[in-house]
Length: 304
Length: 318
Image (cartoon, rainbow over all chains, first blue to last red; front, side, top):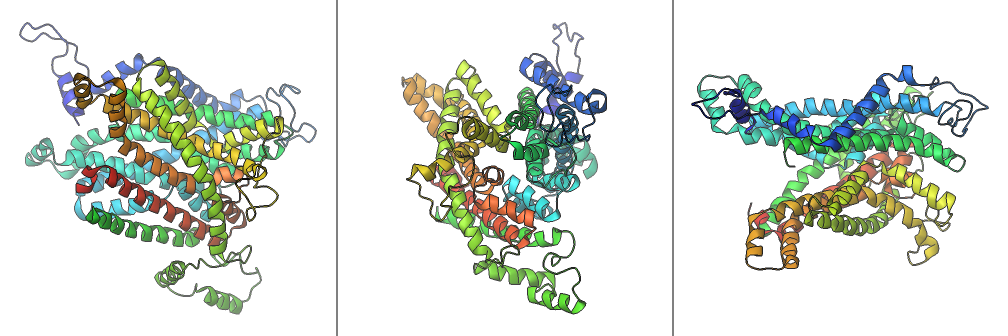
């Protein structure tokens, strides 16, 4: 909650000398976060991997050696390096490497979209609930409590299972899974600053509710919300691939890591290594997002 | 204390009711008419009306909910569309098998996770801490169903020392824990299931222990001349409420979130039942399983909260 205060300090004379005192470099909040991150080589290294995964996913048509949908009856479940397929082929003779590269696109979308939606929806509801208090707060938070009472994978499976498979339904159900937690984080942060003196001062000087939220509340809420959201990305990737694995997420023939795992599972005894590859892709992506999120949290020094 | 118990139980009732509303409305989330799976495509309007009346779909939705809840409270979850058996029987049979997995995975993950976390928290910043933290991150980042597949590849396909799936030839009815021929089917699912809780518990314990260790009273204890072992005992005791809360939550997840692991190992528990219900679009079973599992989750959270209040008087007074 002292974010604003720090920023304000940073805005005062940074390099000029006041009353002959030696100049002290005062960093703003985000500047100091970046400064701390610059010396955290673990976070930086894994951040580079995340960036590489994103670039590979975006540039998939340029990088992928084959068409990920091109089937071949003779070339099914072939080993590494067979006829120019670097990582072999899957159970329908499609190139494994191309499918893994294209699969990154879907996995990233399934990892990021629900978190983004939940952040916007849950964050808004949380700020409204925290700021309005009383009836609105009770209505919003008790509804959230109900959804909080489900284990996350169970809620995702329940909603996707009832609505049927598909990427859109998967994104909807995962968004619904993350919204209550996001809402709680935003509500707690809002309620903490709501009764502080400077908010009252702003109101006394004639600021409207929207202005207060925009300039005085959001700055304090965005930090914790952002940290929490970043920790959810890897959870979302894992849950989304789990849904696809159960046949509830992305539908065939789309190349998705979870779906590839579930179809390759049938040929577990023939081609154990090929069956392991999509899992490795999921694991690397999720651990990178996890470690980057841990690093950013450490740099922003917010506990919880 | 009694006041706290009553308040906490009263708080759980609306939650449970809300959960039942969500489970009830799953039928209406399903695309198309809920009767689509029961009726033949060429059914006459008359037949549709009769079946609708038989299932109670011709009444207003709140009335339908009230009737459904009344039946549920009497232990009647309806009949499975796929097997025509009572959903209650199917769900409770499967819950026993899930509980068996959870009862083995919980102590395993609690002990390993707590041990790792406490060790790392006592030596923050040192090599032990780094190794434990790294292992814990791997634990929470692994897709556990994939880990299950890898374990199957290693122990069932390559070395053939453990069975790959199922519960053995005798099935769940004649499953005997004290016979290795049956018990060996538990090993891989339990290890797979314990992986994520181990990671989460280790991380939480490490954070809690490290935080308590930096408090002033620890310095006081040292200044009073207490040995390192006695200091650590105080630290662990003070970190326990936080650790206990996470353990309880994880137990709830072991019961309610085992669908992926059970599907990988075709373990005939509630998660696998849920998977089959989804494949068959068997909405009554889907509803019943999810309601039972989420109510168990709510009950677990309630028990954990009460346990915490027993351990920590500060919570009782709040």
